[in-house]
Length: 362
Image (cartoon, rainbow, N blue to C red; front, side, top):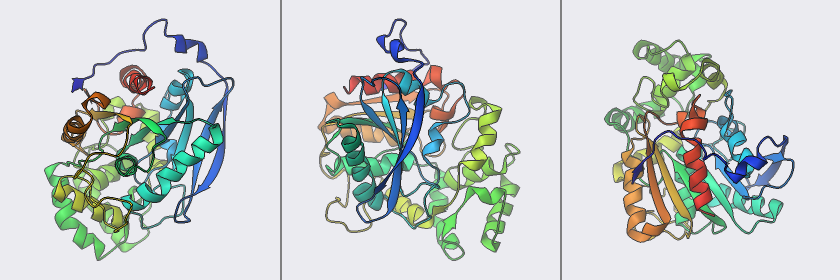
């Protein structure tokens, strides 16, 4: 286990010769294994991408755009400037796709394997790498552990992977508030802070307004209530510039209670469990060794109040038992959950760690 300190790409890095490449983007639709329509955003660059394709996978109730906040250098920019071919996946949890009562099982079995196959087919690459976050991470790790993405040789996972550990108040909400919410609504939506169209939405918004006073951004406060136990929960305000804090209002929307119901079961068990009964997924994802040869690097912000750093510590212990030479853990000081990617200084503090992990998996 390593505690990573802020740092920069080493001076004279050969990757610097690829920096500043012009880029455009195109959207490539793909159909998940059960027929659900998803897509990939390929951020294309002029010239070669010698370090190959990397797939970026967002979390719950956001979209692929979450990796491109209004900061001087986004993670997408950084990876392209360091020689990677960047692909952003909009899986079924994306707010750019039709709302649906998804589970992690569905994403693991149907979405991510097809996204990987599409990138391989589009690029001709024999192998790719993946950077995965939050529920994009849990569901993608389910794919990996089940042996469904053998083309992926390097994985960088942020915040949580196989062992979701949450603050005690979050566990209380999952156990006692979720059954009450289920009687009123099929979803939660941080945008209710701006527009609460139904009685349940109005009640949730009132509760958040009465309990969260950390800022004036209603969506920011709703996000904290929905996903964690902090004030705020998913980032440290001091890590975000004002433009990003405002931009976040448009980057969160509906998330179904089916997800929270599965997460409640996983938190109670201490690790990921399947809920849909598919043959190709193990019921318990840490009952046996992982069926992947990928090198896996785990990241955890030490101020994360959505999933505690212990989430990744526990997964690191599991991976170390089975493949100690193919796993690593970095605890990121002074970072939380999403500010690892959105922070105004992330290009200095966290992106070099991500880059080094991807490069090491080559």
